[in-house]
Length: 200
Image (cartoon, rainbow, N blue to C red; front, side, top):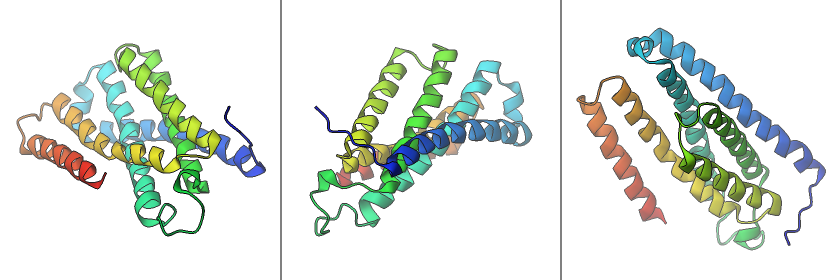
């Protein structure tokens, strides 16, 4: 049985970070819509469902960049998980920033899941529901137990590939598959995975 004890800091930080994650998605969705309408000629020619997915991928990309940056900082730079740090075993180490990042990610997954269910199956089928459900379960387990934060952060760092996946989709629906950027993006995505697995 998991020992769950919520201190006064967690009682404020966790709900606030989840709400911040949901709000982030709503704001970035709208910014993506406004910027795309003004700056990308192809946007106006998209179908209504393609516009929804275009905007949805905007906040997906934003979350991925934030999650990857925070995860990289906490695991590689901050010293929180360094072996020679004198703050207990690695599996028990956490910080207010890792708690906050997990809350924001839960907010993102909730917002994205709401959109998937609303437009089901146009934004993703059962595999997306399974992915989001398992992701939220793993993050909540680490958040509530206060354990294994490093391992969840390592998984969140793989979100760094999401911008490349989303850019590939953007270029495809914009009719830019023949452009060199499409090829370079694919190569960058492949290289990103090679770098990540070399770090493990």
